[in-house]
Length: 394
Image 1: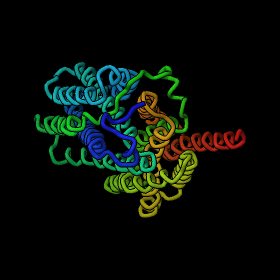
Image 2: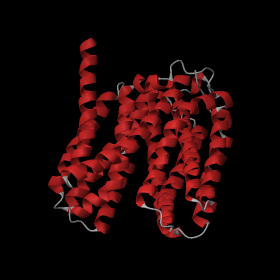
Image 3: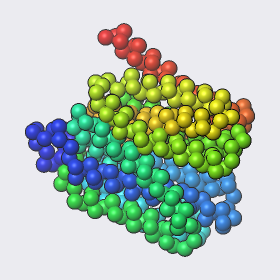
Image 4: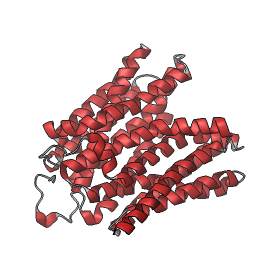
């Protein structure tokens, strides 16, 4: 089993606030650093005359690092402890983040990307495991809704900081490093409440990818749609005759939907013993919203209205999928499944932009909507088929 060191049976339904604060601060700091770092690093490379292809290749190291780090994170946490591993990950990510400024040779950015995103992936996995393990079952969705909302705020704050700090000098790198290092304070304070992994996971890592398929498939779809959609939506919107400002505002509306719906969706999932019908419903809503995009491209306000709810559905796959994972597993199995969860997210972030970009090239501008609808449609069909199969077995 995995529980806070000082946990007692009498407080199973109480929220462990030090654990919640440690996990939320950890992931929000990572969100700020990534939100600031992604545009910052791309702009600096462009100023240095690096081609877009090479910039994209360097950026793709984030997904590769996540896929490599996910399987070994649980082993590190088992050997050295959850809080200790998180503290080391904070140090590695902060140091590698600052090192980008001093690395003048482009080839050096590849190992730095690998170190930075490998360490932040470790923080993602262990903070989610910690919060899943510490959340009382009846309030797990609510707690994870808070977690997802704060993470969204962190990602939104990063680009805002970039717009203020710019790309000149060492200051933006120092700000990102300080944001990450600040996460060490609540982790250190709550270290005695961090979960203890008393045994190694029972299954091989890849078995956990398929152990709770409704959750891991949901986060794969989320990663694909989020990464591909955010990266290529400005192109889609401008080609659909919106201005760059209008396109940026539509992305903002999606982000607002992402933030405001996570706590209500989490609370709704708390009222459901089986989260899978809710995951299927959000996939169907995502499918319908995607198919509506070409029809609504003549009206900014109608597009914004749909994207507000659509953004909530997309992010809800992550929140409810994570809650479903926590309701099915405990202890080292939950830690390993959390790693598989983040692994599937990373695979989605690599696959999404490729598929959506290719769809635009093949089918024209509306290929953007068709590709995203395809992702949602596949998950909707799989989840609906799985629910029917389970009911027939029952």
